[in-house]
Amino acid sequence: MATLSLKILDKCGNTMAVSSGEDFVDLVYAAAYEEGDVIELQTSVPGIHLNWQVDDALQTAFVYVTDTVKYDVPFGEARISYSPKVFSGNRHYLYAKTAEKEEVFAYRNLALNPADQHKDVPCYPHASANVETRGESVFAAKNAIDGVRANLSHGEWPYESWGINRREDACMKLEFGRKVCTDRIVFYTRSDFPHDNYWTQATIAFSDGSEETVSLKKTNLAQEFRFSKRIIDSLVLKDLIKSEEPSPFPALTQLEVYGTVWNGEEDA
Image 1 (cartoon, rainbow, N blue to C red):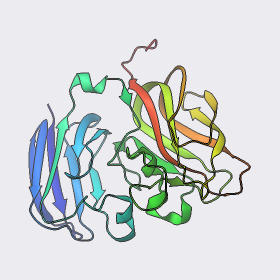
Image 2 (image 1 turned 90 degrees about the vertical axis):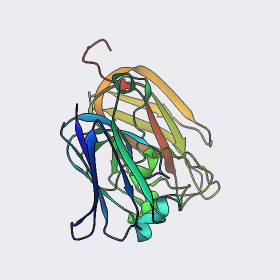
Image 3 (image 1 turned 180 degrees about the horizontal axis):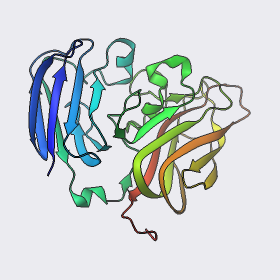
Image 4 (image 1 turned 120 degrees about the vertical axis):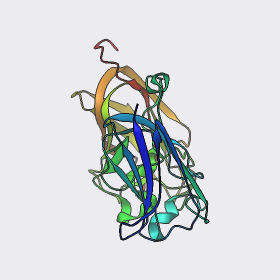
């Protein structure tokens, strides 16, 4: 059993609301968020799988938490990569619930995390990159794992994506925080043609030392690739080869990595 706690902290660290419970906690915050506010999630058990709803207008995230998580409520430019409904108004409902064993070991998209942040946090999966176009929130790596597949335009939500600022050596890292077993990856590349270009080839480097190189097409549809099972804790998307079309703007809308949390057996 885990003791869970949710807090709303203001910019000075003062507690504006708090709630706690065993294996489940929810919190109603009856006020408008202000710039600098932080949502804090604490657990008595480090290394725990949780269902976490950061906001009632944001999809619930299935996450693996290793320490206290501080979620920065977005304002200003950081806000436009989210739905206008998220974090708005003066009444908010949050919760966290310890995951059931059946949920933990279910086959699913291991990359999905609508609650990922643009900073290193002890909450997984987590996406980061060596470049994000102009440092703008709508082109951050975390957008590629938020579950929003809309890829026929670019810019503000729901068309946020990972943008590479024309870098030939662009790469994105996806960390799972613990070992997982995967055998399938799905790409949704941004397809705002003719503004966009696309990649004809990409390499996935797994943390076990193996690699898969895949061929991509000019399409707005899902591009799925299956491979032998790998037990990994992270992967890197790299060696992205752009097509010869004139646009310099290929981008990634969504990366889905399917599998299960590793059960400790080498033949998983």
